[in-house]
Length: 79
Image 1 (cartoon, rainbow, N blue to C red):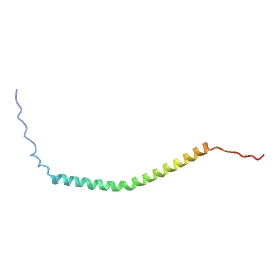
Image 2 (cartoon, helix red, strand yellow; image 1 turned 90 degrees about the horizontal axis):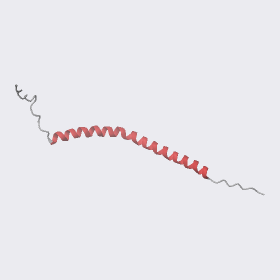
Image 3 (tube, rainbow, N blue to C red; image 1 turned 135 degrees about the vertical axis):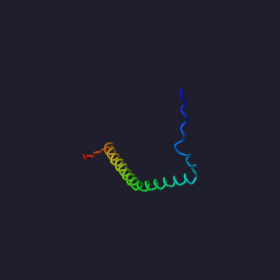
Image 4 (spheres, rainbow, N blue to C red; image 1 turned 180 degrees about the vertical axis):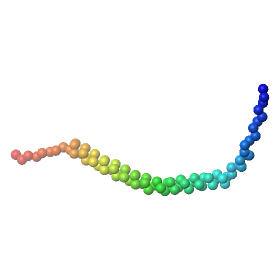
């Protein structure tokens, strides 16, 4: 049996991660997220307002229909 010698590492050890590295990466992520939020915020507000109007109108229409259905009709005749 032959033994295989251990392979040497292909690269040297990477430099240690510093606090500044982490802060820089988080800052770039934050800028990207802030831009996306700004782009989507206007659309989200428009969709929310439209949905609220549809819900109010549907509630009004269904309530009006139910009110007409349950309303008692009184007929008065002169004798």
